Length: 478
Image (cartoon, rainbow, N blue to C red):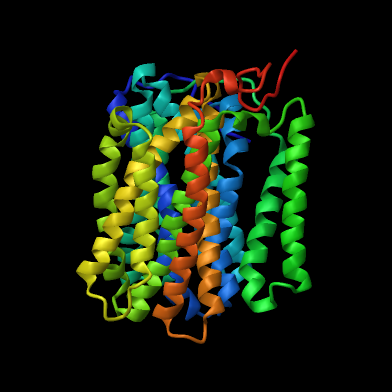
């Protein structure tokens, strides 16, 4: 059960203090997605002896559960209390990390990653919702920008922090370091986070199960394709099962009085464009994270710490661009989103030319191009998702935004890992080049659809389904 809300009101905390604690919680759970990529070489050489497919699942199990449970976790937070959801999530993150560190085999490690992902799903929507609780309506787009910047920079924090841990510790040390961090953040959240309002919401466990199973089957097909064959029964069956499960999820949601997610909310063009665009951006970013650590360690011969620090240019571009993206969009309009998405595609294409002999400053410039693109478009796209929904449905808005990000991240890791596996007999840089071009092509295609939807409407409230109750986890009424 979710932890009960703290009975006694905490001493009033300033908005900046709440922002800092919530951003730190977000950074922790998102950084774990990136940090584990640095451990791939040590995991591959460990006594666990995971196969290439198992390595992908070690990375993606966390992201899959994280992304697919974000919406029901947001509903749980709205119903039982967002602060309670946050504290419960941090406790699960710590417990899952300890299980992962003690794992004697791949199966237990995967179980620990699943528990950690469930905790992360409770943390993320609660952080944004609690930030909005202490923000006046006029400042909410900027609050979303701050939160989005934190989640984007978290990937860099994960690389640097993970590199530091793995430089001096075995792979288990990476997971052991998470538990005390989660405990400290739990104490800070208990002290400073507002209690938040409770709202009627229905988590919809059946819908949640269909969504997790559908995305999981899709990832299974992508991950197992190179080794089992794309037309093999397991792979083809996984892809067909994914299509069937996701279709069943959509049909059930349309017919249910209290669905996990009513597909009709996507009638708002800016909402669906924002969700798709955020997914595409993080698809590209985390495909980079998966291959970057291996490129820098295998091809360039960097240590884990140096490899982790080498990703810092990503933080620079994101920090600078994200601080001004919302204001630039208000002044220059849709072009900011288009330029941002183009920067992501351009950065991926540029990195496809990297080899073992590529000077690091040139590689860093490629990272900077991608990071500026992320910083320009992601805050604007995320703000569109949130502002297309009323404040009463903040849990759903943050859940949608986070789900798009994490599912996009999981798919990016899977596609990049599959691309590397399919070129396993070639030198690493050649396989990486192929992977980057595949990912860039996918991001380009999805970006085109995103921009068509983005420019086709302004996400006005009247585009929402008629009769919608305005509450998280509830469908049309009366």
